[in-house]
Length: 479
Ligand SMILES: Nc1nc2c(ncn2[C@@H]2O[C@H](COP(=O)(O)OP(=O)(O)OP(=O)(O)O)[C@@H](O)[C@H]2O)c(=O)[nH]1
Ligand SMILES: [Mg+2]
Image (cartoon, rainbow, N blue to C red; front, side):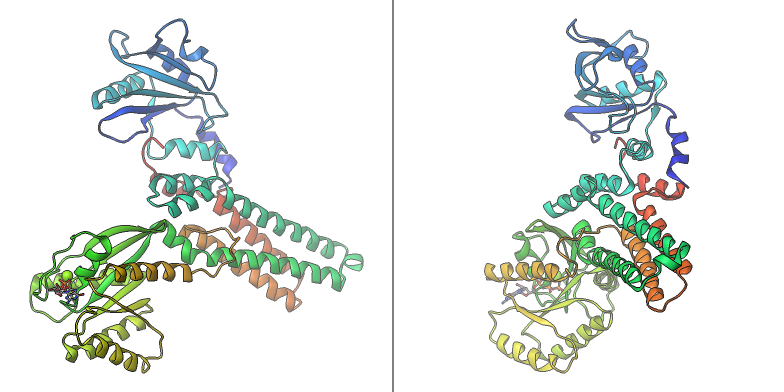
């Protein structure tokens, strides 16, 4: 569906919702958006003094202080600050008012009810942002950036969300589309006026331009390896046999006795999750039940969960202990298994304070050469803080090593974006191949046309109602 067809639905009801979180707070903000906003506020808001005007007479982008009444105008609910934003220069693009009231449960509910009594409708999840999208205030990637901004827990999450929210991705997409259309126009000239325009130089020029687009798209697609992790956080799972020191390692990294540590093998049975931030990167650490064959029903379930966590991991810390030498071979078989599943693994040789640690290292080095896969080995001891620091550094370096995009490229953080960019890239590559094989220009221009349309889905210039529904339903109410 073209976005312009959607605009018809947009001027529907005036909507209201609390935009601040549930519970008690010093102040809460209730938002009202739509063409009846001024009229509704006039009925319920009475200025405190002559200094302040009734809602409908307020200058846009000014505030008023006054009393908020119940819908029957018989009871004052609260003393509030009212802010007015005028269409089209508001978040939603519609007339808007924001009521800053005291953040009590009763007050919020009573003010909302007064608005509903006056004809406002409850805003659904993300409905303000949805209207902003439909009214052309935000495109889809920017709207997704708004949501990421709210859920950001680390500075890197914050920065990529900001990049998206501020339109950096939209601009890049727009510029790729414009370039595609320029190429299409040049191809059109060749098709129309072959005698004058169809020269080897002209064809060469077009091919070079297609190659440039391919490069930009490829770079954006590659950035997803890091971008996804920045947005979701890096999932690091600590795995290994029982009693090798997994929970101790988690505790040392966290600097807190989060997981139970005992000398009894099989202590950890559940998944233990923790969150840390490493130089602005969000990292989810998961401690798991020791992997072994067991008849214990509870432990069995724990091990099944450990494997589920391993399957989701971006990086597995596989811990070896110098104890129980006869089990190292089994450990290595487990590691080989994980390599086969394409998992990223770092081997940690733990309990470095024990006498057999060097023996373990030698054994690992010898046996790793038999695998045709390079694995790093990091030493660890729960008694040395420096070891935890080195491991954290290793995790961060691992993340940095994932980058293979150009450094000035945009960073893609959403799977939806990656999928669209990949499809576009595929078409551009087909066009490039077609060009090399001197396939008829009509076919090549069809491919580039399709690529440009594909991209329109990314920013939402061309979208299905269903996709809009999916994206905005993930927002919170009030945003
Ligand atoms: N000497 C020494 N002992 C350690 C070290 N790390 C852990 N341990 C001991 O090893 C035993 C097991 O530690 P845990 O951290 O519970 O091991 P785990 O791998 O979580 O064990 P499960 O939960 O049973 O799978 C405990 O007695 C720890 O004190 C270490 O670096 N050096
Ligand atoms: Mg444990």
